[in-house]
Length: 339
View 1: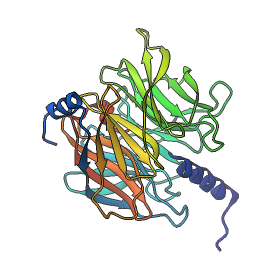
View 2: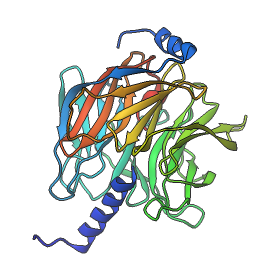
View 3: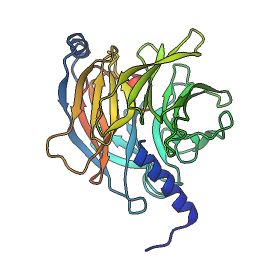
View 4: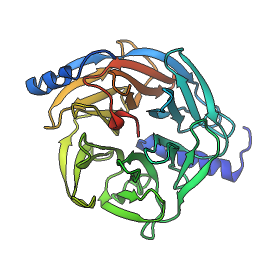
C-alpha cells in the first residue's frame, strides 16, 4: 500500500467523517397550484452531465454547492477532491461542457455561493474551519474568515447571503462526535463581526432564506428536521421552532434551496432524491432519478436557473459525480442558487 503523509491522512479522515455523517419554461403558477392542493407527486430528474469520477486518493467523490454566476456559468464543488484535482468546476449548461477553475490545496469545500456585495465566489472549507473567496474566474484566492467562534472552532457547511452581503453559515461543529454542538453563525460582510444566532444544534447542514428574507430555514442532519429562525427588524435572530420533520428512512437531511413560490427543496444524504415542501410544511413533491439508476446515493443540493424553472441537482455515489436536471415547481431566485 502506498504510504501517505500524516497531513494527507488527516485531511482524508476529516473528509471521510464529513461524508459518513452528511455533509425552464413553466411559470410559478405550477408551484402555487401544488401548494394549494397539498398533493404530493413525483418529479423525474434526468441525467445531464457526468462531471467527476471517484478519487483514488480519497475513495469517493461528492458534488455540492451548484450556484449560477452572473455570466450564466454553473459552479460546482467536489468536497473530496484531493490537491491537484478539480475542487471548483464551472459548467456551461448551454454547451454541456465543464472545466476546472480551482484545483490547489487540501481544502474540503462543502458549499459555494456568490456574494451580492462584491460578486466573488465564497466557499466553506469544512475540514479547516475557513471561509475563502475566489474571483469569478477562479483566481485571486483570499481567506475571508478563519479562527474560533466564541472560543470553539467551526466546521462550516452551507452558506446563505442576505441582501447586503452578510453571510449566514451552518456550522456543523460536533458532527463527527455525534453531539449537538452545531450552530448558525452570522459573519458580517467585512469578516470582522461574528454572531452566533442559534446553538446546541444537531449537525446543521442546509440553510436558506425564505422568499422575503424574513427568516432562515435550516436543516439538522442527525435529527432529520427543518427549523425556521425568524429575523427581527434589525436583522437579529428571534427564537427558532421546528417547522418540518422529514421522514427520510435511512436518508438524512442535507442542503436546502427555496424557489420563488417559497417551496423548500430538501436534499437527501443516503438517497439520490429531494423532498419538496411548501411553506406550511406539507410535502408536495419528491424529485427522483430514473428507475434502475445504480451507484448514486446522494442528492445534496440544487440550483434553479435564475428567472427560469430548469433545475440542476448535484448527485454522487460510487458511480461518480453527476448533474441531473428537472423542471422546478417555480422560478429560480437567489435562494434557489445553491449554498
